[in-house]
Length: 399
Ligand code: CTP
Image (cartoon, rainbow, N blue to C red; front, side):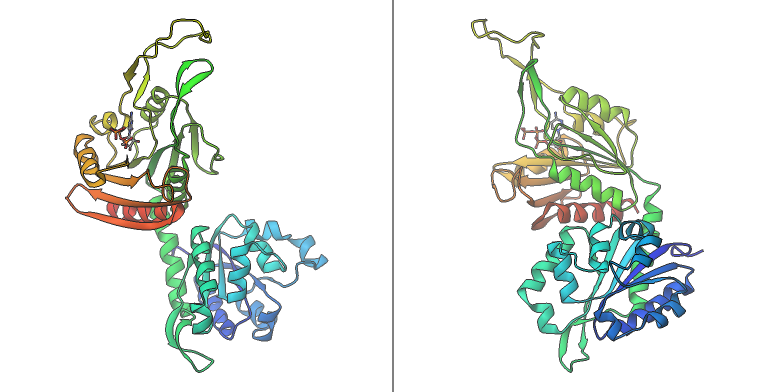
């Protein structure tokens, strides 16, 4: 059995000269026992016919958003839910632009926007269109949204020009999708745990000490583990973010609760400690609100270091233990020190004093320090892409 057999794939064909190649992809998918449904845009019909698609796919072809026949049989939401994954082939500059801006004016764009599935985009266009800054921006946005972009390749184009923009060959697209599915299958055996967000240390029922962590980076890491097939647990301090689907989500407030829930959810294969845990808690918690004229005692004691605790107990320690280092100065020195003092395998260090890449930003720039004295920088990018890069490295390490 191959990784594609019995999978359901929705093929979205847009209007470009390479649309005819989508037929070859459909033929390849069919040979691998894939169940196929197709959406064809109005302009794609200038290049391929619904009849040629149905005869190859032996599945229904959907064309029009407001066709009462197709909507009653399967509406645009069910269509996007039906598929295990979606491939847009060829993806024109127009479709890419619509997707990156959330525009929905036909069935294809509506289904894509409504989808909660993995989407592969296979661009094909003239080299100048591909290189246009607005297209480049759109592609970056799509990557940030979690779409996988396959190609384009460099070569001779139908328009007679030469350059980047040529559609990836159907056999390579097939390989790409197969590799993705088999890696999902392989990763199913792995468990991941992520801590995220700030903790709150209470002085009394209405007052607490906390920090600026938004939890965004940790949530993105958990999401990326899930999307790569891991059984994922996210232990989060209070944030403004929504719990993530298909992830075991545990909300905590204090560092003590985070420690307890972390231990309860071990063992795992990989743990990423991205939470900004308060180093101190109040020595004395007052059950009642402290009154203004009462004598104030705000002396503090240290919280347990969750990362150190887990990584120094052999019975708890995951195969791969990854910590973060939030620094405002001496990044390299402090990160290396945390790598050894906390006994972890990797430390992911970031400069939290820079607002562009700091706590509440959409972006991050990190330097990963490995146990073998090597390090590498992931330059400024959206936190979702940082997460993908980290998880990609985790998968390589575990395998
Ligand atoms: N960490 C933890 N438990 C704590 C404190 C920190 O698990 N009580 C983890 C964080 O989740 C992160 C790493 O330790 O993975 C480093 O956290 P950071 O705040 O950068 O460093 P600290 O250990 O708190 O040291 P310092 O505040 O002196 O930089």
